[in-house]
Image (cartoon, rainbow, N blue to C red; front, side, top):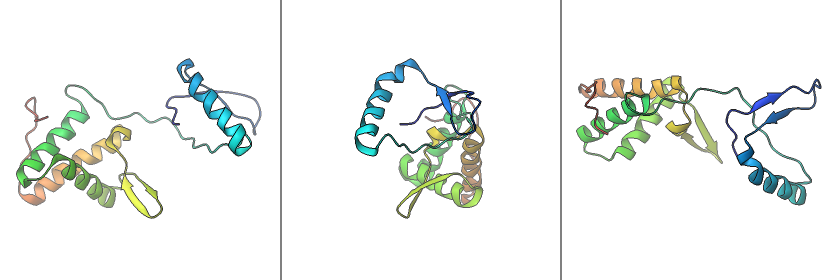
Length: 146
């Protein structure tokens, strides 16, 4: 379970942390805690980090910009958008420190849906770099293919 934008509640204790979450999560949390009591002795794994602004979506957004460039590159190289997007993410991870996640030695760039505005910028920049390496010009403007 991942909870985004949880508001911290100060407890005045260095060893006790508390967060307020949406009421819509109550059933899911109840199930999680019930299973945790039964299966793990009420012990949990937490990953906490500062909130990061995710990439923009909608018209004139980073998401539209990125996917327009992915579509242009895929068409120019006669391959699927899925493979081109993965390729751009792998290049960005190798050359620009785009974040990755791993499991048992398999390293995968994160989904762009989890990327911050800065990280999505890396992907857009990598599209431009890759196009330049191929001798292509990418179209910028309202007519993005997507």
